[in-house]
Length: 203
Picture 1 (cartoon, one colour):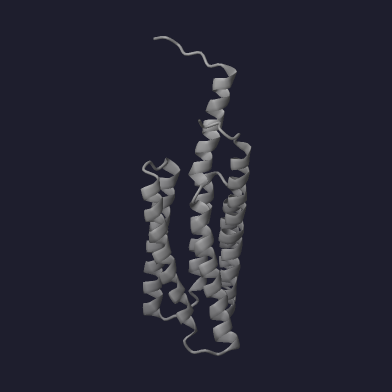
Picture 2 (cartoon, rainbow, N blue to C red):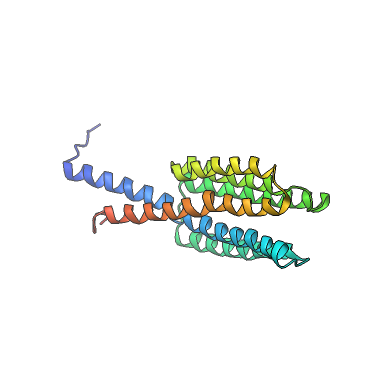
């Protein structure tokens, strides 16, 4: 077998391809975190205000925003699938993770609908927030998500000692530190990665 010799230019191209591949692995993941992060944050703070400030009896209806999140997720996922035929291992793993997380949220919601929403439910949801972002951070090798997941777990423990209304606010805080802030940091990293790849290097 004839051994191929790589010139410095060829080696540079390989490195640039690897950078581009890593960038593509991360691209699109921030969209889901930001979308679900902001929707959940708005729902948490909105429910607190409706319940605590305005004394609205149907304060929980603000969570109907999650239907919008599901529809947007399906739309974005279908569009990305049509645009990109090949999925990386990281993308597949992330997909399976969040499908499982979505099912877990649905099951937990069904359980607490049966038990009653006066039960201290939010520590369990916050715990799941932490699990999703921690595993995502490990898959992406992105420390802010890992740290955010750990922070969410600590907030879940704290929320267990708080009354229901303030559990809602702590859930919003957990979303802020585990979803929204790390997602913006991920987006910044993607932009910086794109800028570091020389124009025309992929041609």
